[in-house]
Each structure stands twice: as C-alpha cells, then as structure tokens.
Length: 595
Ligand SMILES: Cc1cc2nc3c(=O)[nH]c(=O)nc-3n(C[C@H](O)[C@H](O)[C@H](O)COP(=O)(O)OP(=O)(O)OC[C@H]3O[C@@H](n4cnc5c(N)ncnc54)[C@H](O)[C@@H]3O)c2cc1C
Image (cartoon, rainbow, N blue to C red; front, side, top):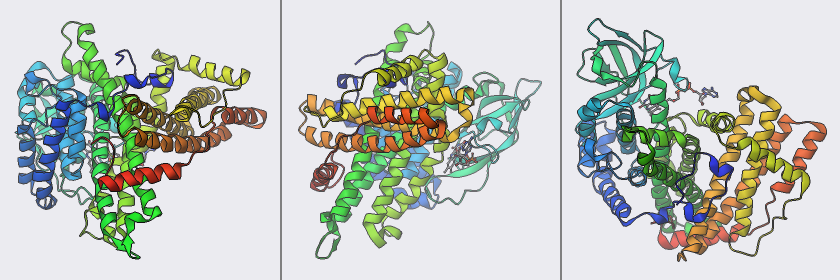
C-alpha cells in the first residue's frame, strides 16, 4: 500500500485496488479480536440488556471492566499506558462487534473515544500515566462534557467558565447537557472558557468538590446508556488538570470528534449487520400466503438493499481505516524527535477529517434505513416491544444527532475540501479546471456497460469524481467567499462527495475481490454494480438541482450539457443483481460479505 496518501486526495488522484484496505484484508489477529469481541457482546452484554435498560449502572460498570480485562477498551492504545498497541483496524472491528448492542456501544464509545483520546493526544505524560491505564482497564469510567443546553452544534459558544485561583488551581462553573455516562462516570473531560473567553479543556474527577450529575434523561432510545447533565458549582480542579493549552480547547474538541465520527461508523456497520441477520431470519420464518415472506420479491429487494448500503459504508470505512493506519505507521520516523504517539494519532485523524465526516453521515443514514426496513419486514411485530426490531429502530435515531449533527457534518465536508484546495496543498483548483477543459474540448468516451468486469462501475466512479470537481469549481466561482452562506449548495456538494467516495470505495473493494479470485467475487461485483448505478442516477439529480441554483441561461445550458457528457450511467439489470444478493443473504441467513 502507498503510505503517501493525504486526506481528500482520492478526489484528484486515482487509486489502485491494491492500495485499498478492505474487510477481506483483515489479518488473522484482527479476526481473533473480532471473535473475542463478538462473543463478549453475545454472551455477556446481550443477556445484561434488560438490567442496563433499568439503569443498573453497577452492571454497566462491570461490563466496562470486563471489556477492559479482555483488552477491548485499549486495543489501539499504546502499551506504555496500559493498552494493547494495535492499529485502528483493530479498534474498528471491536467497534463493529460492540455496535450490535447500541446502548452498551454508547457507554463503550464514550470510554474509548471521548475519554481516552483527549488524554492520549493532548495530555501530559503525567496525566497519561495517572489516568489512562485505569480508564483502559475499565476501572475508571470516562465521560466527555462539551455540549450545554444553549450550545450543542455551536459548541464553542459554551458558557461554562474556569477561573484561575491564587494557588494555580481552577474554579469551574457551568452545566453540561446530554452527557453520556454522566450518571456513573469517574472522570469527565470538561470544556470551559478561562475567564469566560479562552475555550479550554480540563480533566475533572467526580470526587472533586462541586461536581455532580443531574437526573437521567428520558430518551427515545438507548435506554441502557446513561445520559445526564453534569453540574459544576465552584468545582475545584487542580492546576495539573488543565488539558492541553489555555485557549486551545477547540483543537481537542475537534480531534476527538474526528475519532468519534470514524468510530461511530464502525458501530453503525456492526449494528446494521446484526439487524440484517435478524431481518433475514424473521423473513425466512414468517409465512404469509402459504410461503415464507423471504420468497417475495419486495422483501428480497429490501434485504438486498440493506446489505448493499452496508457494503458501501463498510468499503468507505475500511478504506479510511487503512489510510489512517498507514499514516500512523509511516509517521514516527518522520516525526520530530520527542513527538508522542498521541500527537501522531491526532495528526492522522485530522488529516482524514473529511472522510470521518463522510463516514459519520453515510453510516448513520445507512443504519437508519436498515433498522427502518427491519421494522417493515417484521410488520406488526416490528412495532411492538416483544421483538428487538422496535428497540433497534429507536436506538439508531440518535446517530444522526450526536458527534456533530448530519447537517453540521454536511457543512464540514465541502468546507474542509475547499480549505485544503485553497490553503492546504490539495490540487483541487487545477483538477477542477482540468475536468472543465476536458469537457469543453473533447467528448469523454461513451459510458458503456463495458467489456471487462467492473469497467462500467470504474467509469461511473471516475465520472462521479469529475462531477464533484466541476460542481465544486463552479460553486467557488459563482459564490466565492459567500459559498459558506449557501447551505443548500453545500448540502448538495456534500451529497455528491458521499456518492463519489462510496461508489469508488465499493468498486475498488470489488476489484480487489476479483483480483484475488475470491469465491464471492461475483457477489462483490453485483454490489458495486448497484451502488455505482444508483449513485450515478442520484448524483445526476443532485447536480442538476445545484447547477440550476447557481447558473442561468446559456451558462446553465452549457453546464447541464457538460454534466450529461461526463455523468453517463449505462443501463444495468440491477434487479437481477439484487436478486442474486438476496439469494446469498437467505442462503447465509444474514449479511453475505466479510464474515
Ligand atoms: C443520547 C445523547 C448522548 C449525547 N452524548 C453527549 C456527550 O457525551 N457529550 C457531549 O458533549 N454531548 C453529547 N450529546 C449532545 C449532542 O452532541 C448534541 O445534541 C448535538 O451536538 C446537537 O446539538 P443540539 O442538541 O444543541 O442541537 P442544535 O445545535 O440546537 O441543532 C438543532 C438542529 O439545527 C441544526 N443546526 C444547528 N446549527 C446549524 C447550522 N449552523 N446550520 C444548519 N443547521 C444547523 C442541527 O443540525 C439540528 O438539526 C449527546 C446527545 C444525545 C441525544
């Protein structure tokens, strides 16, 4: 694999299937970890769910400690602070396994991502040694206090205040809202403004005077996870517990979110996989009109579509994981002397922030679709609490809200791209101009079904990248600096980028399956075919709306003609492809890829 890839460069640079990490390329060690994690969830977490839903936090603590004992909390944490020191791929597969139990996954996610990452990436060696081994072992429970009732998306507008005392310690005042693990956490990463001005972070222990949590929220879902306000009333925090620098809290908050978004995608893919198995088994067992409902085309279409959407997100997730791991592995030798591993991790997460936002949006919307179709496949039984379909449906909804709402992430995606293109060395403008010139001078080759396997899909994926480049270039030209106020356009650009990344990642994964003569290669090709075909059609509609909103008259007609030339989606029998995937699903009684 090439260690030289940068965030967002897939848009301006071709990628070879050999350079892409996929679930099929997991090592034996990864598979063993996945097995350990899956067994822990099935044998220990799932049976405890009823107790967790009664808000029995003693049980939650025990489960976290057990996860620590099995090495699952610190799988990607360096060994010198109590972890196992493996790569992010290992963390992703643990996240996937835990994602099958959404309430516990939320507790676990707050522990691994929200509590460990700030201290690992921004803590002093003394803070790391003091807190990390005990959080990694599950002895201490962590929580992350960024949001307030008046500042959720606009997190930097927090009112919580920190004032330095004569002895160097800090007095914190404020109220944080919706804090995961709030009811039983021991350690809180708290964001507050020094003197009401400089956004900063602190490690706050429950035992410090003036720290308390409020009542449990009555939530739509995730009843087995604790969510409370955290109240700081003249909370006395020692000088040593300032995390990072005064006024640099935003760096901590944003990097933690980058990791959280990436890990959330793993939890969503894991949850979707379990849901597809549940839907399949129900559809095979439930008989109507004298036959299992799994034999009806309408239901088979649903099962196939659920799996295809999961395949697309999984392909993006593992591709990004590979990129992050390559960057982390390549860095230590180049990093300035004394650079700590946490800093290298933070840099890699920041590098792939755009991909993390794509993953957050795509995975949360994919799992919402999957749990919704699961309810539909269950019919009336899907609407009653006797079946897990109802809980899955409620539990999934919050994924579109936390870790930055999907609207905020959709604003970030083109925002990061344009920033990298104008100030960050990504040759975006040149690439957009090259595509425009190509469209003005030579007609691109006719998109045909192609003679080779995945030819058509490869062309559609390339055409989607070109569509993004043309659309971003035109939007920058049309609106200039004020593009950031054109939210509808930014949403469209973001959607185009998600379609492009998804289609290309799925095609590269399928190409790798073909090149490695996988017995499932034909099924991978079917998935990539449907993903590219449908992404192409959706992208056309999005791009037409976008072009219509920014151009008029001749300019609009020329741009639409260019769009028709670049984005040609050849006809394809996606019904037959979905039927073959549905056969594989019912044959395997669940998601047919990567297990
Ligand atoms: C179960 C649960 C657990 C949570 N856990 C934690 C935790 O552990 N720690 C923590 O700090 N927080 C946590 N949160 C809070 C969560 O991060 C916030 O709810 C989230 O960031 C959204 O903020 P908000 O609720 O204030 O919504 P708002 O910011 O008020 O947003 C409302 C709507 O407006 C949209 N919107 C807002 N700003 C813009 C804009 N500029 N442009 C376009 N649209 C916009 C949003 O997308 C959304 O649709 C949790 C929340 C829940 C529900």
